[in-house]
Length: 81
Image 1 (tube, one colour):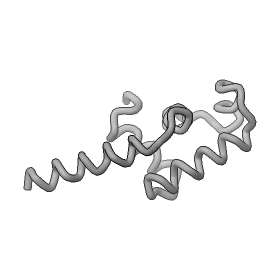
Image 2 (cartoon, rainbow, N blue to C red):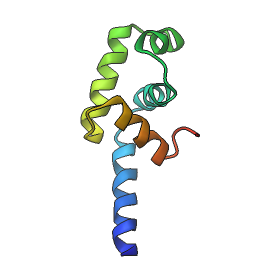
Image 3 (tube, rainbow, N blue to C red):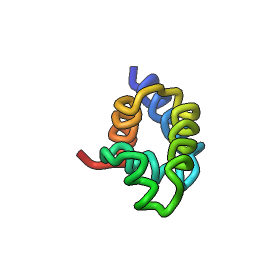
């Protein structure tokens, strides 16, 4: 049972490492509840660029909803609760 937990955690770390630096920034801000416009203003990029990052993050981690992304960020200690 512990081996399964270790493999799952290792798999999550591997997926997270596939995210680029900007994607991690966007994911943290999404998990903190910011809108695309707010994230764009904060990072000084276009809102459409934020949406591209969001789509890429969702594809890379295999999730389909913002709530799932938020849970993912919390589980991977990318944001604090």
